[in-house]
Structures are given as structure tokens and as C-alpha cells.
Image (cartoon, rainbow, N blue to C red; front, top):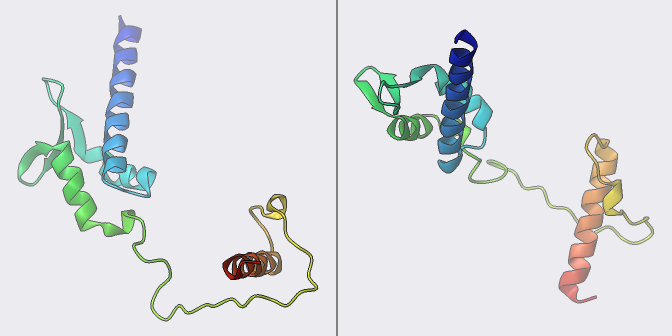
Length: 133
């Protein structure tokens, strides 16, 4: 009996977690795990099985609570504009004489010099493509 009760509790917690994460994803949250950790303690299941959030004004539906949370914490949403004020990096297509870069050479943990070489190669190929070469 005790094991059956624990199994049901684990399943209910997994379902609650999944429902909250799905709603966060639907709201466009980029950092779902971080946002989930921030809101998980305030969300419970009622006697009739509904997920609600406990707030100063009482119980509110999870959807309303998460919508409010996301609007109050826009840092969980993806950046609307890449870069920032004053970001004016322009890469010029390098003159020939360099070796080409293959997709297999691009990998996490590349050095800054390798990454710069890849960027320059991308600019070179893109500018050739735009010129119709």
C-alpha cells in the first residue's frame, strides 16, 4: 500500500512538472528549467485535481500565474534584438589565400582565432553568393 501511494505521488509530481514546463514553453520562455525552479514551490494541486498557484490574493489558475510571472520577469524570454546598444561589428570579406573552413571543423570550444576565421569564411562565401559568383 505504502509503495503504491509513493508511486502515485511521484507520478502526480511528474505530471505537475510536465504541465508547468509545457505552459512555460507555450509562453515563449527560453530558460524553462530556471523559470520552473522559480515558480515550482508556488504551484499545487487542488482536491479536484486542478493545478493552482498560491498568491497573496488566494488561489489563481496556473496559466494566469505563469503569464503574470513571465510578464514581470522578461529576462526568461529570448532576447528580442541580438546585440545591444552600440554593437556595430562588421566583418569584411578577407582577400583570398586562406584555407576554406568545412562544417566539420566548427565545434564547441573553438579558440577565438578559429572562430574568427570561421566568421570570416562565412562572410566571404556569403558575399560571393550575393555577387553571383
